[in-house]
Length: 302
Image 1: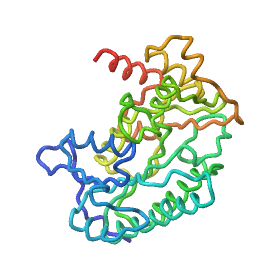
Image 2: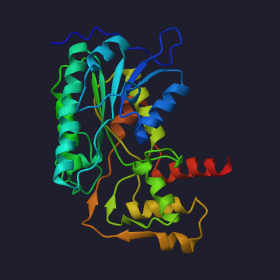
Image 3: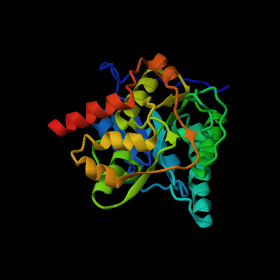
Image 4: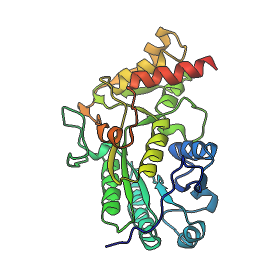
């Protein structure tokens, strides 16, 4: 049995040291947003790219983590191409073997870990939103990689660990680098002439990245480990969500109709039930429609 002796800092208690976060994948879409948000809050943030670290070649990572002594590792890094056999081999090496190496070090140094997972650990065939108790059964290669990562976390003797399964994310700042994973950035690119399509038969609530910041803060503060789901709720398909967002960007209805087009793959439902997270940290999770209005109307007024 592992001794859980490491103290945990309350980020809202000014009488204690501020938390120290080590973020892998800090140059990715979510990594950039988390790093910037935590810096603004006055937290200590160590970004993996500043140390020239790669998951497939960890080098002196253990020495760095021992010296930095972070309160938690937020593990975001991964390889996101798998169209070819060679790319799949690379993804397995980085996302699975690299994660295993990182967790071995965290286990040795007794550092808690946040692992960011996905709604695609499920097969999309359930009629209602998925809960944390539903068995995983991915059909995509991406989903399989994340399940392997979850298994590594769950089998490790870490002092604490959290698995946060996320729906696709978006931010109103579409000019950051690494915007491929930003749902809204894809819509903007379509208006700039890069034709795109969105599935009209796939469901799951796209979520603003600010909710991820609040979820990580809340879970770290309260210290309750486990698996959690985070997603905005909506009845709209990916295509309908894209059309809904577009109306707040100013383009004419004719341009929206011309550039945001539907495709019809096999129906899949990736909606997540976020009630457990809400109850655990009292996080209000708005619907997709509420969040879009709040952020895009605010952005339009600035």
